[in-house]
Amino acid sequence: MEHRLHLLVCAGTGCVANRSFQIKQKLEQEIIKNGLQDEVKVISTGCQGFCERGPVVIVKPGDIFYQQVKETDIPLLVEEHLLKGRPVKKLMYKPSGKEPPVQKMMDIGFFKHQRLIVLKNRGRLDPENIDEYIGFDGYLAMEKALATMTPEQIIEEIKKSGLRGRGGAGFPTGLKWEFCRKAKGNLKYLVCNADEGDPGAFMDRSILESDPHLVLEGIIIGAIAIGASKGFIYVRSEYPLAVKRVKIAIEQAQDYGLLGDNILGTDFSFSLDVIQGAGAFVCGEETALIASIQGQVGRPRPRPPYPAESGLWGNPTNINNVETWANIPGIIQKGSQWYSSIGTENSKGTKIFSLVGKINNTGLVEVPMGITLREIIYEIGGGIPNKKEFKAVQTGGPSGGCLPKQMLDLSIDYDSLTKAGSIMGSGGMIVMDEDTCMVDLAKYFLKFTVEESCGKCTPCRVGTRNMVDILEKICSGQATLDDLDKLEFLAKTVKSTALCGLGQTAPNPVLTTLRYFRDEYISHIVDKYCPALVCRDLIEFYVIPEKCTGCQRCVSVCPTGAITGPRSQPHNLDKDKCIKCRACYEICRFDAIAGDAIRIKSGEEA
Image (cartoon, rainbow, N blue to C red; front, side, top):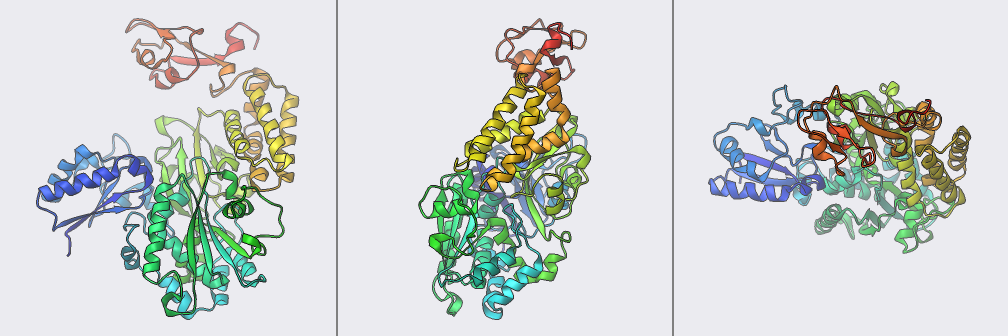
């Protein structure tokens, strides 16, 4: 049956958390109520990417983009748009309060500056329906690889494409496949690493939720090339929706003869299972992941031997992350020349980032390698909220580096980020504004890696813990400049001596903040003052009487009753009751709440 309109309801985790399943149900009820069931079809899709604006509903044809839709909006949407043909402007995206709403999805800056390869099916198909994936040329690349290419030709095509592993290290994918194919042994394994553990990162989760068959197709092509007969998708158990959809996809692929014995009538057989990890960050490291699959404690081991030579149960094993596998079908279908024409000389193709933090448009973005930080943050991300100044961006997750505003025009590629002291990582990108304390930030991420360390090697187990102790001394005003030298020495030592990638990259937030924001460390140590007014032991807040209008917004948010005063008159702030939560500072519209160093306010000499 041909339908006049299709309503695509985002059913990624973010929108689901905002009741998108209920919105779909309400839409279907209203459509039936108005007798439109033969004209309008509602489809649940994967993540649309614009997570900050969810729940999202897109009307096709027309690509009308509705955002932050509530169940109470549904009757109006159905009556006005579906019955009368009048798009509902109040549900459309507005770049700012003064600008008119934007109707079409691709007219929104967040979408129009992206380049989609891995996310090509974003929001346009039902991830639980294999027929829809096939309808968008799904599994044609696998058929081509199986019917017309030798394993060596497949590997050569991947090598010529310039694809590098998207899990963090950036090792050439085709070369990795070649090592595994040439390794001795009749039994070989493939692993899809979906153990995504970076705070604020959700690239792999979204791909698996939105387009699981794309990942399966890439894995099957890899199995043909390497000669593997068995594969595993290792996904953290905190991703229940991704696990559900991947399992459905595997069952469907088996039913269609795309997985299992004698695939598409050939002598090639390949099976795939899902393994759920317990959420240990260290299991993102290849050898720790292998140990976990084998039922052992997830701890890294020294390399060599590399997994390509001796991996699962001592057999050659190839491991790539979700995004890497998802790039494969496009390369095989369209050719290495097409793929290598995108990006820079040493960083080909596109990269997916989870854009989060102090930015207007949070979400999932896919951009060509070589794009600048400025383009991502301002053209796609919409800039910094509340007219604040951009201060820094961290790339590469908790083990990445913090890059300052003078590097906004830095090209996003493997070489440029490494030279700047950061890493590409799996794709986390956290934006910070002027209210971020870089010392406190370094402490936060280092604490994360300390908690996630497996404790096997001394540099990571002891070195990172000692670094956290020094950072806590700095944030509390108890450190000296000698401590700063010791911190830098420890960071460099851990980076060069730790056993695995977790320990080797853990010092990056410290080293880059020391490199680009050393003045903030000096201020904490010498002036006993936190310029961002974050470190509670070094600041106190007070009211500026001549600026205070007595609006009582600060009174309403103070959790301890520290701010008092009658309406329309300057208020008072009791320092003994103040817990320095910053709620009053952040809500005041008149800059009437200020902060200063405790030693200065107490009358000591600055």
